[in-house]
Length: 423
Image 1: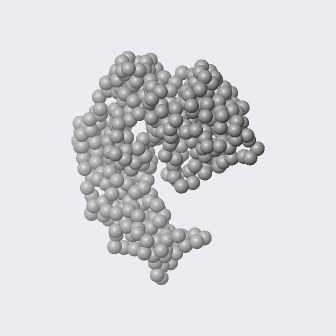
Image 2 (image 1 turned 30 degrees about the vertical axis):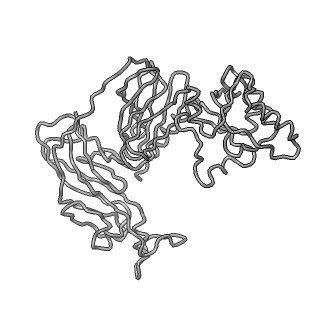
Image 3 (image 1 turned 120 degrees about the horizontal axis):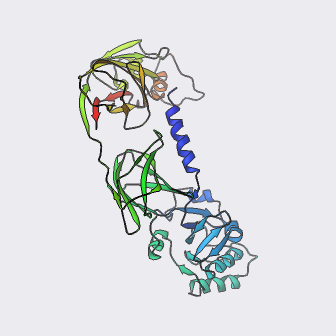
């Protein structure tokens, strides 16, 4: 029942990621001896470009789809690449592919990769294969270039091809990824934080002359970003929340820089307890309980609460002074896993990811305010509870999924819960 905001997020993200076409600088030829999926059988390939987007291409694309346009390679679909990279199983390639690569390089293309050792088929002429390979990697490249190596990032830097998107790392293992879509009037960058922690960073884009905006697929809102542009690149400093994703969109003409003040939040109320908690019926929990303070359900002494999986509602009343700002925010702190907030009987939305913050603007009043928070956890704890000796099962699964001694998952509203004024 609380999945709609997450589905909306998926829909908005999918819509934007379908716009225009993928803006890739590298055509990554993965070879002929194994399917593309074989590259990922044990791990993500170590030689994937990190600061420039890429498309995987196969022998059919090389032979039938790509052609020269100056130093670029263009596909019949409209895709355009600055570099052809030899990865995957391309250490051995058919003579037909090598001949096509030779034609493309002599026509002006840039090739990055090691010289192939031979053909995987006995039908090809080894002497002809060796002659073409030795010529290409020996410096006879016509209008094009050949750079030997297995590091496309280093090759792109040597070729002075700028990083499409680069970022500063707050830690050695910081990891951001991006997808760049290009339309007739906009550059759309999808950015993801791959870590379960906040990541302060500065993003730089190979973009100038346009002002960046942050499009939030979780809320459906867009806002201008503070930025500075220099030497053909645009820099944006921000902090991404754990596993956060979003879109940086360039579509409007902009100045050399823009400063936007960060919001200032001032706590005006802390909701410490007690809390009245009512449980979804038919799930093994009592009808209600009173919590002196917020606590993890899985640590409760009562089995019905400890093993509860479902939706439980927290009830409390909080007071606000007569004079507060117009923009109020309820910060729930830590939630496991979803929360739907109601203030004075009106919904303030469903929160499904950190930060669990609900906009209370227009929902509160001076004096007493009635607060209800419906929290839904995972069903793991109930499955573990059903596995206890002598337990009367509440759930049903075709196969046993958890043992009785499996660790319980933290559940419920863990807080701290505060009301903040945001300016």
